[in-house]
Image (cartoon, rainbow, N blue to C red; front, side, top):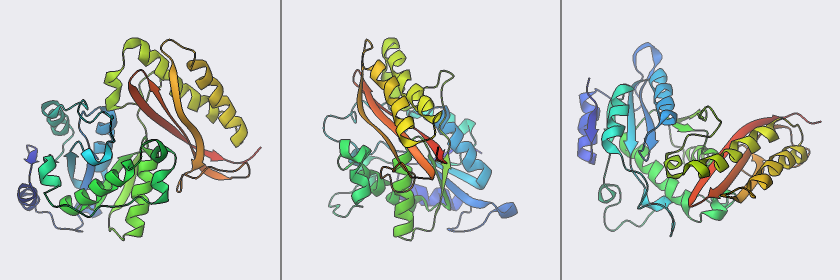
Length: 294
């Protein structure tokens, strides 16, 4: 079956009807009927991996392609964010996607909009401290996509760990009946996490950017928070002297669910997360660790 492209609410409803989808219905062999993979386009192998996870769990997969203006702040890269719809559509077709929902800004945010979702305190720390309002915009568009597409499952990448944690929090707090599934971070052979923004990097900048994953892997070899952060920071400090230099925004070791910094006594899962700029490009990365103590 060819991919059904829907650009409006009415076209999306028609697409669901063509596929015989009903909200909350179970598919064949106990599989859910519809899984959603929300994206901003410029699709890469990381997105493909999320589509494959979705296909394993549902009869049909919907992919949204929408560069959401609400999650970009002043002087960020909304205008230059890569828009590659024709290539993205080919990726979706190759991965067996049933519906691509690609609305315009006017379709998603009609005139007169007043209500949005607040990410609360959790949205103002770590990444939120450097991008005020970012997670409010993320949660607003995600909730709108949930309401419009009406999936049973939604698949997000672990690479955006704080976003993932906040979406899980929103689903729990607002009683949204959708299962949230995390897909592992996909990396280049040299360790760089796949990102649509990687295409901004020059060859020299890309070499410097490899310090993000090297720092995380260096930290992961240790057992206590102090040792983990120390090993990671040593790599980043060296990269700060490179040409071009890495400019660090943050390096944190935080609780997987709340994104508050962990203590030396913490046991269990934690996220080692980093954000930095190389040239004009801002990159994030993280690894999930299990702390068992010294």
